[in-house]
Length: 227
Image 1 (spheres, rainbow, N blue to C red):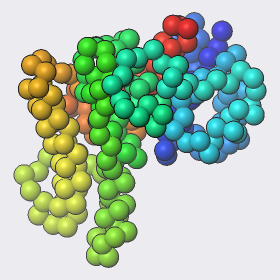
Image 2 (image 1 turned 45 degrees about the vertical axis):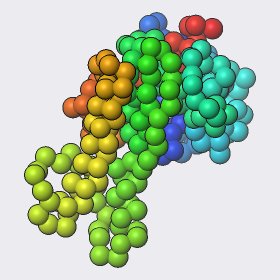
Image 3 (image 1 turned 60 degrees about the horizontal axis):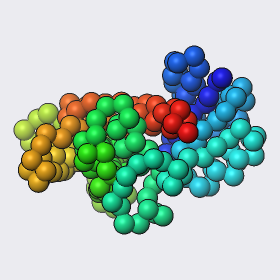
Image 4 (image 1 turned 180 degrees about the vertical axis):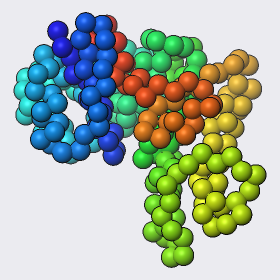
């Protein structure tokens, strides 16, 4: 059986193929025709989507398309508004719990930077803020004299020109936000809490923990197995 997994984020659409125990990344897609072509030979298509505007298009591709919902994920949660919780956030926690650890600081870095907490297999909740590229665009659009820059890992002690000042401010703000949350929760729960990272900008934070760009796809396969 060939399963196609589709992760629809705010910006990118990632598609993988799972067959005979192997998960293969097919690429990032934007055009509907490309998506249709990539999914045409799947016996089953499993979708995790945070972009409702694309859902109807995918539903029309065939009866083999199935959307994961928060209610269908077998995961204990203390989140107080489950009806508004993004499926990707809970699926990320589910995948980490099934494959890696029951304790985790979950960092999803993309259009948004989402940092969630899982303790003893229970999803606790977390925080949502701007991703690196989103912050860079906001600065350029709102401040007339600031250029649009690409995010980068910043290793200098201080920014000594406008570009490096922006690069450092954008990156270090997010980096130390994650580090401070890890320290806060390790102190609160009296245990070491590993960091797991995913998302299109996840590679910028790889030094903090374990980076798995395909964890949502792996989680979809685990979800299908568990049913």
